[in-house]
Structures are given as C-alpha cells and as structure tokens.
Length: 316
Image (cartoon, rainbow, N blue to C red; front, side, top):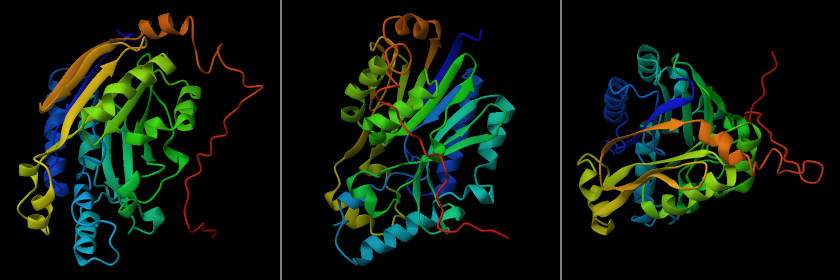
C-alpha cells in the first residue's frame, strides 16, 4: 500500500575505523532488512567507518600532537570516495532488493581536493541510485578538529511511496533554518542520524515531530570500549581514558502528533522495524502546518543555497 512504509532502524556498531569490514557489516544488515521486507533502512551518523571518539580522550585540541595527526591520517585513509565507486556494492543491494537507504559516513570528496573529510549522509533510492550526499553543515565542537564544514547541496528531499523524506546529521537537527528548508521542500518523514546516546534523541525527536507534524526517525549507532579494534593506532592511550560505553543507542520514532511510536532503544544491537501510515500526516496538519497555512512568507522567508561549494571552478 502506498500509504504505508516499512522502515528499519539499523542500530549497530561499526568495525571502528575499518572501512572494508564496516562496509561488509552494512551490506549484511541491508540484506537482513530486505529479507524482512523493509522498504527503507537507515544507518547512524558517521557509521562508515566510525565516529572520531579519540578526540575527547587524546588531547584532541593540542597543537601539532603526533598522536592526533596519526589517528587523523588513519581516519582519512578509511574515509569513502564515492567517485571511486566505493558505494557501488551498497547501491547494487538497494537495486536488487528494491530498498532505499540512508547511510551516515565519512566522505573524502574529490571535488574538495580529496584530502579533507566530511560527515556525509547519503541517500540511495530503491533503484540503487545515489540521489543526494549531504555534507554536515557545521561539525560540532571537537568534530571540527577532524571534519570540514559542508554546504547546502545535500538539503534535498526524496519521494518514497506516499512519503517525502529528508534528513539531517546530529546537531544539525537543532538548527532551525535547515529544518525549515526541509519542511518547505515538502518533507513529512524526517530522518535524524546520530553517533549514539539517548540524551541526544529523547527530546528532539518528539520536538521535531510536533513542530513539523511529520514522522521523525532517529537512528543511533552503538560503541563500547571493547569495540575498539586491536589494530587501532594509539589504542592504549584511547582506552586508558575512554568510558566503557561511548554510545548507548537511543534509536526511536515519533509520530506527527509528537508522541512516541517507538521509544528510545538502549544497549541493543540490531534492526528495529516499524510500519508508518501516512494518513497521520494529513490528520496532524489540519491544525498546524509550519510552511503551509500556519506560515507568513510575506513576513519571513528562507533563502536556500544548494550550490555545491568547491575551491576550483573549471572552465575549459
């Protein structure tokens, strides 16, 4: 039925900072979701190949520190270059199983020189085509020591059955104007991806749902101290200070009325399934629609610049 959409929230841990092994885990998860007839599967922020947890435990802001340079270089080597076809097998699975995918990853794009990295959120449709790559607009706090700021090119929405789906990374979800941009583009299923932890998802998931009168899905990853691979550079220094649990999950779903459909799930790895009924969007927009009948574009209006930013513009 066009009105109903079966979603799968992939609350899993990465094989930390190991691109190849994490990609294999992602592919296995997609197949598992497809076998359960999911139509959309969502992975957390920076899952491929993992969140830069070391920054909090290795004097990440200290200038010219060798440990941070070496960890950063290791991170860059394990970042994804889409232009080199490194997501081709994931796209092939999307096409084979006719399943749409949101994948949080670290991108090393050639259009920015190929050495800086971005926290990106990739949408692949059920035909296996990459439809948008959203680079996080503003990395949060210590993330700025390793991730570069993105641009508005990926602020896109996509048709998925009756739904119009859009997405933001982590604390971008607290930025009113990017949210408003997606609302104005017709979003009614909002995806919020996180590195993990209930303290991020428990309030904002319901808040965005109530503000937008949309379904909101928050997807978090998991990470424990025991998940750091033994091959991690400077592992002893990282684990010496790190807590036992770095990301406890917190994946959840709120309906367009702002109430829980699925409360935050903690400390549990695997796929979380739910079927959403689009009709709830129409019901809740009856008394409030932030970009429709309850807006005043003659008074306040948003400008969205979706030009992909690059240092070089080539004119042959």
